[in-house]
Length: 232
Image (tube, rainbow, N blue to C red):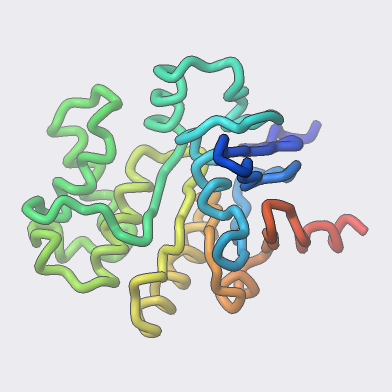
């Protein structure tokens, strides 16, 4: 019996009520199974950011169905969606979004702030997550004292701390130099090999082609999905 996908989008559209109406997504359908590493790649204006917000339940589609970890988004209240994000979705952003006056440990521990876990347990799990991404030697360093690559590792640890069903990484190498970028791609591959399900949003085709599966997005539509050729 085939396992249910971790993430499923069926005929998803997103329109913004401007004049004229902006159709950011136009009938997007694809699935992500447990353990996959998928790149969603496309140029600026292709709908990647809108898709990220909908996959991450930060926004609702205009039409179509989105299912995350077995939960149909259309059936959830805003409160339930927040709970779903807290327990099932990890985010890695291009801008890191770390609190500058906080240590690496406390930045990562904050990733479980809305789960109800006591501070001591959150800090223990944060230390484990930081060691997993190679930052065990920087636990007590404040974010402003870390390099760009180190800050992205901290941000990745924060996304992993709750053992989410899926991690969504938005241009995770966008603010990094080539060496740091290569190291983050290698880290993403290592995390996936250890079982983490990851979707990377990127404009960089070279990065997308390094991953096992890539989905091309253009003008709000899926242009290609390398899994199609595997099925054929």
